[in-house]
Length: 353
Image 1 (cartoon, rainbow, N blue to C red):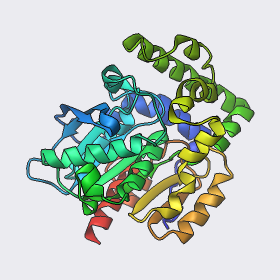
Image 2 (image 1 turned 30 degrees about the horizontal axis):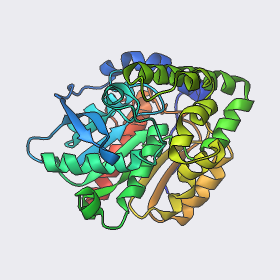
Image 3 (image 1 turned 135 degrees about the vertical axis):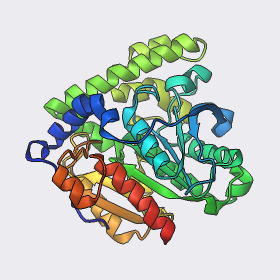
């Protein structure tokens, strides 16, 4: 288990402050914070579970490289505006990996291609593996690593769970040994408890409502693109995250309640079954998740050999922005993006055995 060793400057030792600073300030200047070129991505249409088209970007190492990183982002957004994922893409390509980024179901250009709604991992996990198989067929090198942050981290964990399925070669067309593991940053681990935590906290309610508005806009866009598949009356009732899932998602997946759906899709309950190497970067002061999850995650990390848990006191939600030159020198980092630097170092350690 990793040491809790991330230490930001004093003003950023609040999870909320770190989260807001990264989202509102660091996001504006991220391109000037790294000295690596923009990848020459190729637009690619993959086929996911049940043949659903998934739109993505591929930057391939011309000589094979050190492996391939497949990743996606969190609950809202698309590849055009998800700068934190694009940041990872630049760094991974510069480190010698091929990179595959994709718009997950109902997001970005994938939403233009299909009316398929989100499933919080049930179908996105297989999507990860299908994309990995097709990337390998394109010539992207093994080993393949899955990654994501926030809800995207949940999806990547589902991808790893799917990669442990029996008859993987026959079902997905990829060798079991080709998929090496996953590294996730601030993953969503237990949806119902964290959502209740947001619903009950003053600032949490504000964050929940902001996300809910964006989800409603996502559904409205889907309805405009695929009017025969999305019920506008259901969209009108989706004024919270829970209502979005209740009125638009769960019935199509066979669930009667959101509680059942969240229980079935939350990675907390299958983490102990993972057998492939898994790095989880998680901050105790994450303002979006129920703080009681920390003790359970720590326990799982201690008793699950495959999990390398780097649990930190500070970091916020998808923050981990470290602008202290002294701390960068201590780590040997060339830029302030602590979490992605730890991720790429971990990939290298795992590959070296």
